[in-house]
Image 1 (tube, helix red, strand yellow):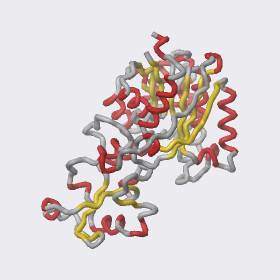
Image 2 (tube, helix red, strand yellow):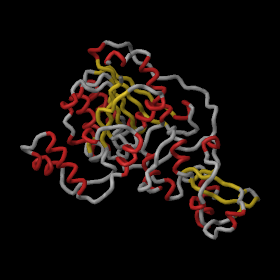
Image 3 (cartoon, helix red, strand yellow):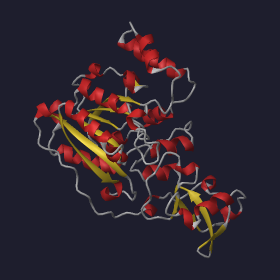
Image 4 (cartoon, one colour):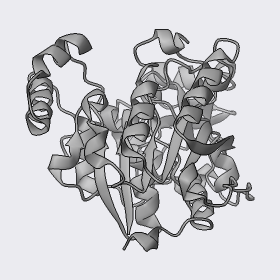
Length: 364
């Protein structure tokens, strides 16, 4: 049985991959604060935790987040789709004691928040507090000693600060006593009609002496975005006049807004709420003409309406299947969750390559 642990867990991309592959597994622990923040500094919290037991520390951190009165929508989605003991969910990666899970994890997966290295972020890297969360990931690898780790991030990490940041990341991984390889993989090369290039690092503990890991080869794409569209779409996803004119402006097509692409652009956290990303242009039907909220304009000389991708379509275009969206999760929250996730088919291919050199069944 594969023993899995994740941090910055999001809506569980690796969990979804393993689930789809029907691999017997157990989730040892997972962690995500759902984008919430605390008023207390890290140092202040550490001082308040002095003298507390491990369980008391975990309960105190949970209480601090509860006091924000903000719903952890990520946790809501995670628990609706995967089986995990609530005692093994952590609200804050910074306060996980990895030694609690020493050698109890086969596969450890995570990708620290990428805004610090993204072309869309401020590129502050390790000067940005979000960038330093990479060290929390590395710390947990050191304390837990999983057989294998998978680290994912934006490709901007490779070039940030004239490649100095990536040099530091490699140095940290080297100190962990893992043989590791990295590659940039694009979702469109692994069966998904989405241009989503991401950096993946796969590390295998040196003392286990497994064979050298090789990243999966690209495969031919046999699907288009149309194959992932819903058959029925609620009228609320269609755009008003301002939105229609914005996304159908040819100037936007190669930048912020794209329409009717066979291969969509990389989904981002808030694209559907600022008219950025991929949209569909359709021929209006009578129910659209009867709804005053929907603007009927002209596109390529024909009557047309424009709409956002639905949350379900976004999930499918990231490779998620039969994903449960709870009633208390808003569209804005699920769009953000999907945009922050990892393309599931890419992870499945990475896992298949791992299974060629590692038999996790030996743990049974």
